[in-house]
Image (cartoon, rainbow, N blue to C red; front, side):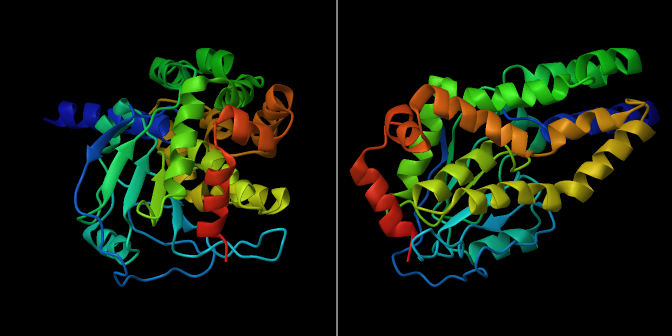
Length: 310
């Protein structure tokens, strides 16, 4: 029993590190359907642009309150972003229930859901999963950590290799048709009155979720600098959890230098710039990416602004 417990603990540490760095996503299919909250249902609004402290998730936020370039404000209580919701406590679920959520978009992959757990959510919330290709990030990180070989880990993740992989993943947000389809579907949901309030999330709530958040904010007129600041805030909210993951891997004998994972755990300006550079090369502008790359017509974009800006 002791040996089995040790194997499960160390395997859990590896899974935690991998799941905290993934940017792959799940198959596009409804996971659960139930009655949405009734029109006009009473629910609690979070402070403008507020972080929502939970026991089982660290990167949960309301996008509301951010100003647009034309003096409007993003509506509070309509769009939420988060990390994995599979470890929520009963108290967390009660807190989410007060948000009046109708829809949750789960951007995790099947393996992530299997090992991290399905979302724990209030009754009546419709959940949809959507995939985004991770370019082999999970496999490469698994191989590196599982080897327990510091030389191999350095060869695989060191000397800028982890950073280059992250940039390639962000570029794929622009170049991969399947990924664009999932981002487009999520923005269309946000423009639909019967889908909001809506929360979208991945495992860490930083890369896939960060890109969707950036797109939503820019699409409704939030300045680039403000949207980028929101993107970078994941580092603030994830810092302690990520530090504990690295300490656990070192203590478990999996990594001599767990700091090799930092480029995979963080969001960085250069990652976002990699995606935006690809946007410019492929579509000329973010507006071109939204209209041509994601196939969002003027009517959808107009409804998005009308619903989310006051």
